Image (tube, rainbow, N blue to C red; front, side, top):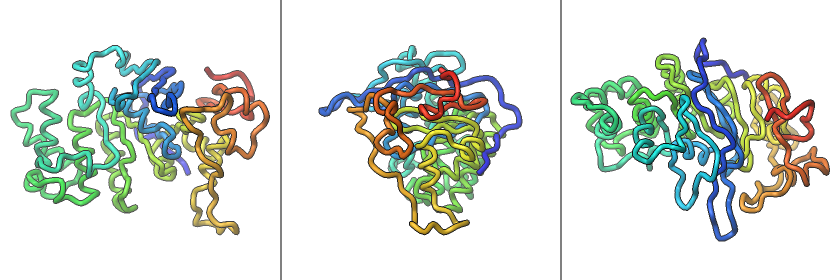
Length: 335
């Protein structure tokens, strides 16, 4: 598996997140949905985030948009977009960022699109929210054409239920890209789509990335898809980034036991495993009662006693690579 950069020239740093903490109070205690996350995305770069359900991927995306559902809150940290700290902006100022500087494709277009508004109206609303546009309806037609909706002049007047699942996802991409944002967050953009439509959607995102220079943060369970699309990958577990690095290197030689377990659980067509599909034993930890040491301790086959009591820092394991694992300690922590 080898990820290739989707642009030949990677530009300056665009998104910078430092020591981000997102908490949700519950009857069981304070859930640490995002726990001390630090990451960056350069302009024009395609970065993937992978991990099991509940690892904090979507909550991280909602944090960037400042759409964390109540009573959850961003407890501390910094989210900087092109040098501006988004956490210092008012809600009114953030409304100018959402859909304009940062676009988002949500997981399920069936629930994200308004069923009683025409598709063209929903695309036009995104444009009108940020720019005076007397021709927003025509721009909606153009956006649908850009995402390969057939006969956009007619289909722009249809309602979401008149579109197939793949076409609804294309509409979500059109809405997310309507104002040519600097950053597009794609949260499981191929969920519930067959493999042919998945490939079409990813080809569409790749071409838009190349044509507009929009950076893409791709959140997905589909490791194979991420490996083909992204130049760099972050692996999340229990709200933390446990490993990151260039796609080809990370998937070819993972340094964290969790990353190795994820890759081992992938179905293989090139060989038959005598024991059948491999699974990751145990269950993810309770985010309201995280252990003192490594969150993956109970499920790890390579654990040592230090893992039980001490939380590992992010060790540098190569150029542009880090892993939060005591067994990856080959030098000084990277942060």
